[in-house]
Amino acid sequence: MSMDNKKASDLSAEELYALARQREKEEAERQEAERRKKREALMAKRKEMAARHRKELAELERQIRELGGRVGRGRAGGGRGRSGTSVSQKLCEIVAARPEMDVKQIKAEAEKAGLDTKNISQTLAYLKRQGRLTSPRRGVYKAT
Image (cartoon, rainbow, N blue to C red):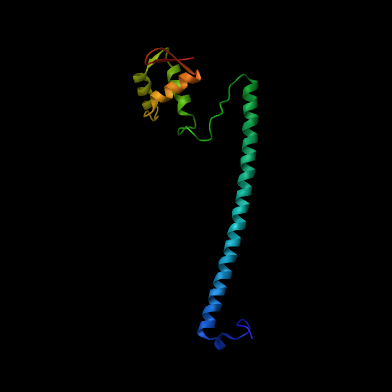
């Protein structure tokens, strides 16, 4: 006769303990299966939402290009500030505000805009290599 068919009062302490452990294990497995099912459903929903988002963004970008605008494609989240624009883009906007700016002026404006200015020289050099800024003389930049 198995433990399941006996009355609880007929079971020994060891048998009761084994039965309790078995039921705990079964309950934990059932809960994990439910969590896995919910997690898979949420991941599928996320995947669907991301696909829809990419499709909508592609359509907006197409419309912008049709109107002669440029659509930048940065790394996903990389180099982005709180507003979603890249530090490089923000620096280009700062430099474009005046005909020419030296590094001290650019750094002061970047700090006012809430940008991290720790690597500003490297970023300016990068923008110069990319052709987004020019340097008519040492330490002075202007927008292209």
